[in-house]
Amino acid sequence: MTSIVPLPRVQQAPAGETPLHLSETLRIEAEPGAAAVAELLAASLRARGRRVTTTEVDGPATRIALRQQPAEPSATATSAPEEAYTLDVTSAGVELTAPTRAGLFRGSQTLLQLLPPDLSGAVAVDAVHVEDSPRFAYRGVMLDVVRHFFAVDEVLGLIDALALLKINHLHLHLTDDQGWRIEIDSWPRLTSVGARGAVDDAPGGFYTKDDLRRIIAYAAERYITVVPEIDLPGHTNAALSAYPELNADGVAREPYHGVEVGFSSLSAAPERAEATDRFLRDVLGEVAALTPGPWLHIGGDESWSTPAEDYRDLVRRITATAAATGKRVIGWHEIGASEDLPAGTVAQYWSYVSPVGDSADNVRAVVAQGGQVIMSPADAAYLDMAYPEPPATPGGRPLGLDWADGATSLAQAYGWEPTAIVDGISEADILGVEGPLWAETTHTMADVEYLVFPRVAALAEIGWSPAGERDAEDFVARVAALGPAWDAAGIRYARVPEVPWAGAAGDDR
Ligand code: ACM
Image (cartoon, rainbow, N blue to C red; front, side, top):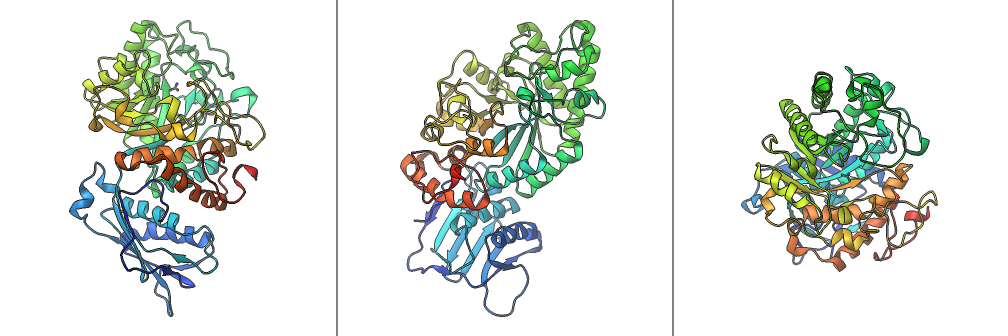
């Protein structure tokens, strides 16, 4: 049977159908509205060595038809019908239909998984009928660009690899103690001072507004929404080093390039209120104006040096200012300590599969105020944890952390269920799932890819596929089939022992 990750809702081998034998030329036929999706698919197929046209051709050509049409009733029985699609491969060609362009794009990624990475020779594809739609509307990956900074083109490459797995949100952790990575016109020292350096004296850097626009536009073409995070009120040493007036004592903090957390905080002191509120309005306003997506992530985690009363006061001011931009607010689950959250606030849960401390209470408090949850249990969904039996790493250095109950295997990354973590939270309360990649140990994008792949495939399947259909043994067999695609795309991935990988490469390159 054909191998697709994440597992589709319905996948059938049509009775009596014979395989599709590709002609020398593939012809993508798309309505004008689907032209951009067709061009991206054409580019992917050409990169695999096949001649592709999107216009009329003389002579034989295998037809790939992309059609936008209203959903069948069965395809609308989902929480996110806007990404639904139907794909048919028959001996006559390929038919992809969807109610939206996003659905056509998701279906095109399934088609790319059905085709071999090398299309330069004779190719036969098994006939298949797929009806698909996601379980959760939000399936994200977070990239920390602070602890180590990544260039725009590197982020674009990661976006392509995430798109293949139907990830639809890229959360960028843009600010932290070690650096401020996004240009803010009204507070220029945030980058001229705050962007210098990274962990262990690695080079710093920041995205200009045009840089971030490029990332956002590239992601949007792949129906991926960028979620910007400005981490507040803790994790702010870079800002506190750039602007003395944000500190309670009026003295700029020293730059920090270590890996400790929990020592920095905006000040709740009345004499700092004017500067702090102006900072919040200006920064959150500029970031909201820069990002067309509906979200603004305000952090809120690990504010251990902020007194509890000050934390609640600051979170109230931060979330109110963020909501006033018109965006929907996301924060790490600690923000549930505030009883004044704006309507629809989302808590991002980052405790364990078995909750510790106040984490479950915090999540329930956000939901009780009309909010929702993104599930990122650190011992299963954090993509920056080490692998238990680490395969060879790209630079030969050990990669990944182990604070979240030790290393995380692919089996652990796959073996959790979003609705089974916080008691009293239902499927409808869960917006989706996200895998954060914190960059303390990742010096290069190859390091990032090694930690992300293959574990993000587990996250993608938890977020997309029907819960009752998930099967660990079947999953690793399907992940093995992704290896050649990742090899061909130049994606570095960890050849973890539980996957029956075919061929060489991966971490060996
Ligand atoms: C976190 O890992 N501090 C959200």
